[in-house]
Length: 109
Image 1 (tube, rainbow, N blue to C red):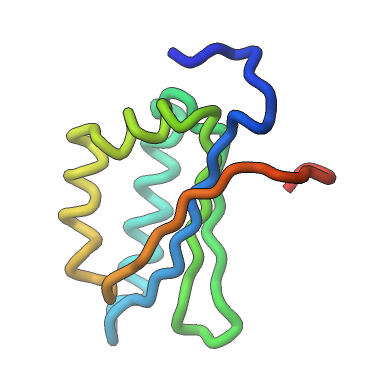
Image 2 (cartoon, rainbow, N blue to C red):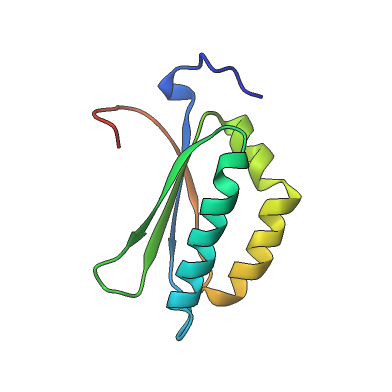
């Protein structure tokens, strides 16, 4: 488990813009939200996440906030994450996730 006294600059955010394949939008949203609701409380170091719908009605943004890079690495190398990705990858166009660290923080975003 990561040190609970880490500063916000230790946090890491993942942001992925995804585009479900034609006819897969609703199924992907259902699968993704069910997975997050069920699994998120069990992910060590996950501080929160959000799923955003793009104004175009076709794209989504998935944002996850982790306490540390080690927590994120532990999650993304876990069998549970790999199993989830096997289920969702066929439903979406190739995504390019990014990992970001906090440079400035205001409010509770």
